[in-house]
Length: 165
Image (cartoon, rainbow, N blue to C red; front, side):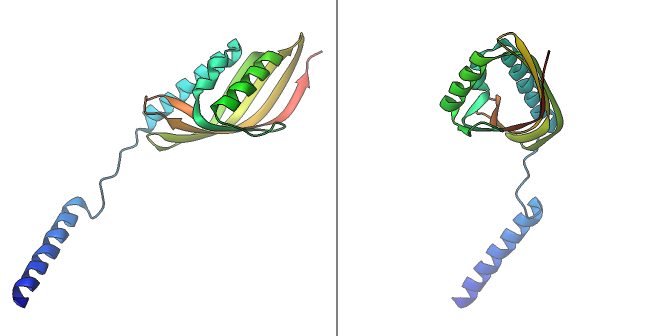
């Protein structure tokens, strides 16, 4: 009886070893389609710029439901409702006449997660007075189950500002 148990155990171990050898001992890696992810992120950035220039408060839909914005000089904004209120206030105070977003590095970690660092330049019209803001940003991206990329985190801080005369 003991001998049968030992033979059974040996057969199970041998089968498991053969199975590991066939798969390389590790689960198959998921292929990350970096080009497709970057194309989706580029499209998101282009939509963001268009909507910002248009003063379209629907820009909030480019954020995930639990997104967070950390912008220098402003309180942390967390969640889509708070972001919508902040956007409405921002667009109510000023019109964006220039919106340039210049990525330095876009990283894709998975087929649904990425990040980016870069610089930005915005020009605003505040009751007839124009001002510029140049700065840096870092952003986190998440791809939803609907296939659309959205901002999950945004940190922006100005390096310099200038009022036009």
